[in-house]
Image 1 (cartoon, rainbow, N blue to C red):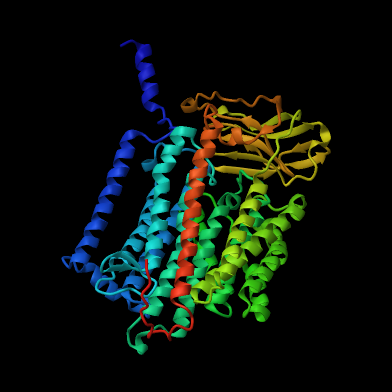
Image 2 (image 1 turned 90 degrees about the horizontal axis):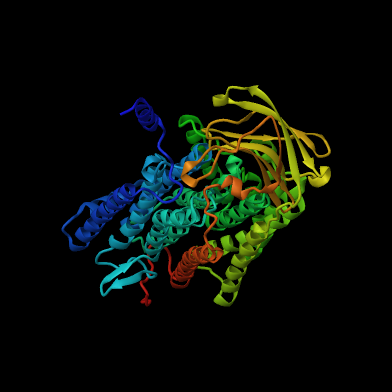
Length: 616
């Protein structure tokens, strides 16, 4: 071999592994599929062994779980509750860790090369396992009047079936995510359709857990002195409600890290929707102070995850919405409307969307990389009121259903459907964006570190026309995926002229751009983009001075997306994911309605409930 040949071979051996921009390598798919199949087989063996009496481990674990936090619940409810709670905490840690890694490091070398994927998979499989346990554990008994018939003599609690379904739906997002990447390229955004499956399945599993708790509580046959004390039931319900708040808040993660790829008005909408749903349910289901308790639990867990990821693990720090003002709004409204749940949900939603909006507005200026600005006040508050009222009505229906007091179908169904439609309309409004036409930016760089391998620079940016930007929602210099995150606001010198507030990275794998969000406009100006052979993209250098078009930022932030895929195919695939999500939501609504109808508040005192015959 010639010297040139040896040099080329050495360069190839020393080069880092190319990060794939489409689906995972075949060997990783086979390993992941084999591992999932093996775990599922083990789960099925234990389930079969328990049902046939050949394996008694699950029986012993179920009995053990009836003590301590599981007091007052039969084993088929208390054991799945413990498994699902631990699994959700593991999945939550993995999700924020994974989001942080993608923001700071970009694509994976493969799904098995990302350490954060393992806690996500373990947590989601744990949620699915908890549901399966609830389904297989009841043996020789009917687990409550709302149970679903599986075979002639096998009944499963409705909450267990729904919990298994939510876990399966979330797990299904992993293989579908790989298929999605193969078809469309990698969409490095939290709001990718298959990513939302992972988050939605995990977050909404809390509703199934609440249903299971209700079934177990009403089916309890143990001695009265072994039931849960009032404070124990209060804590358990408050933790469930706080967990629902955590699950719904994960949809805001891009805003928490400071790299949202959607309009800023979505953030107050999502905060108000989560607050309305979880906190109204907490107040009605848990009792006085329930909303505040739920937020305290949320802050303990959600804040703890931020500390673990940003502190102990050493990745990016995610900001945390407060929600305490929203909880106080709900508690205040409940002083007058606790006996009128739907009115409480609506009034709480209005208070959340106004007073809560104001409190979060102030908090974003303390804790968030992208604070709210006057640009979004009017539309943002309207979106927050819409989300708060829709969430509050759903939270009221959830709590009343859990207590067996759901309004008649002629009222409950239109309210539930209307709330879903309002949320859909608000999200759709936030997705309507524009891209400037004919605008340009002239950038003049002043190097701080001129070494090409570690280059950083300050910049002066002159927009043309000068009046194109007027009090934007954000105007930042953003750099990401270069083993870190750089988000700094631009400082206005005069109309149309801005400067950086800190040196920006212009080397290595950094993707650095100017981001402009003004009204409905989402745009960007690329400053430096690295060479990316996996997608055939060449390096976009950053000379000392250049003029570039102000363009749609999506093609800058998501360079990996394929541009030759028909638009109708993306719409069809997204519609399939949307249909599956609606199916999960409707199934959970069915579960709440079922236990309310079959286990009404006045049916019997707790611990002495008759077992009505109800068809599956």
